[in-house]
Amino acid sequence: MNRLLLIQSVLFLCNAAVMHAQTGQLSRGGTDPVEWYHEFDRTRRSNLWNDGRNTAGMRQDTISVSSAGVLAEYAGGGFRDSNAASSSWKAGVQARTVTHMKRTSLAGSFFFENFSGYGMCGSMSARPGYYPFDVMEFTPGTKTRQTYSFSGGISSDIGRHWRIGSSIDYTGMNYTKRKDLRHSNYLLDMTVIPSVMYYCEDFALGVSAIFSKNSETVNAEKLGISSSTYYAFLDKGLMYGAYESWEGSGVHLSESGINGFPARELLFGGAVQAQWKSLYAEAEYLYGSGKAGEKQTVWFRFPSHRTAVRLGYVSGNDITRHYIRLNIGWMLQYNNESVMQKVTENGVTVTMVYGYNRIFSRSTLSLSPEYEFAGKTYGCKAGVAINSYNRQASQIFPYIVFRNDLLMEAYLSGYISLRRFDFMAGLSFRTGNWREQEKTSETSADPGDPPYRMENLYGVQSEYLTASRITTVIGIRYRFRKGLYTEAAGQYMHGFGLKNITGSGRYAGTIRIGFEF
Image (cartoon, rainbow, N blue to C red):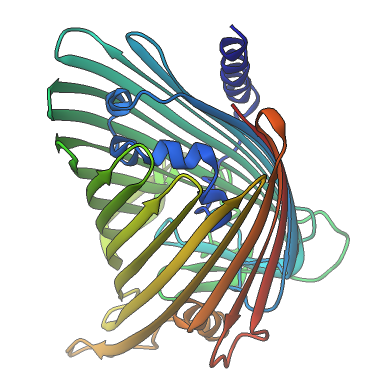
């Protein structure tokens, strides 16, 4: 009964997040080795179906686990992207649960985080790089971000060999800067996945439908009495774009009849899963359709194709287990800029669209093999991540620029438990290289001037993406009685061979108090 009351409390928090978070979005970043070795994460990873899309597969496991906690983190240092803060702090709360009953299993989570970053400028977007364009400003100041996220899932037996399931993931975020040039962002992201599963002894087969929608609106404004002119830059790909006053028509921040700079994207597709004994496989495809602008005035349309393959294998017993995972991802996306004109006839102004120019395209390919050993009092994880990026920018005919990036990372982490203490550590090394080629198509006409490029920011972002770096993480956790724990962790990252970035180090410290039951 006490456990049921605790689970109901966690799910109540998830529901409260929905009612309280109708104005923003951002998904939380990847986990570090310290968070990776929480009891909740280890238990959830023991079921390979939890790595995929099919919530019905949650019942392939029978272990119930829940957790809740609060955290605070401070970060600083000069080795950072042009969009990152010189220093920042954040505080958050998180609650998660997975519980199994006789014929039904439930999962839920809630996460809230408040972030403050100092000396920030650059991208106005809440998640720079997600859309194939970006809007930037150049007056350093403090930015704040409130992130609300919840997820819920259910799996139920409906027959001797059949299960159905469904999940919903929602994230909302408010992102603001209170210094001219000011901006306020509202970002929303929601994904709904209904699923079905057939199982018989050692064999299981599943199918999922995936529906996702995300949107972000950037509202810029100037409230101060200064006579200064504030500039903005619209990056249309590889740092080619329009640089002018933020009220100019080229950056689309202050167009009549349009609320800020709105962008939205719809994703829909499906996934199939199969399991034979200890081997699990999933294949997924998504088609995306996005646009920036509203009503008749749509500046960009960006369709995309996404595929993913997830493979997993597990062996061992109840005390020690070995996991092998392989994730493969691919994406192809285009950005088409509208050729349009506002025409007034008989006192009525309409927007005429004459066609589209494909000004940018990008494709990504990722490969991530990983091995994990999980024991009763110790464990380790090792893997490699390889990412290839190919981009093409052709904002103005006949100028075309091709860029290819290859990034490689190797990582190793582990933990050991001694009495009431858990010690955790991780080490990773990442390096990359890039190649760029400029081309001018043959034409009999005068080609004119090439498009404007923000060279200084391009140099910083290129270097941060491909520079060699080493990252270390250490943590210690003390476990009190009845699931209560406290922990502290530190991280340091050092970059090598830097020319455009002012600092070579970046550090972060985290403290956390939590409860697992």
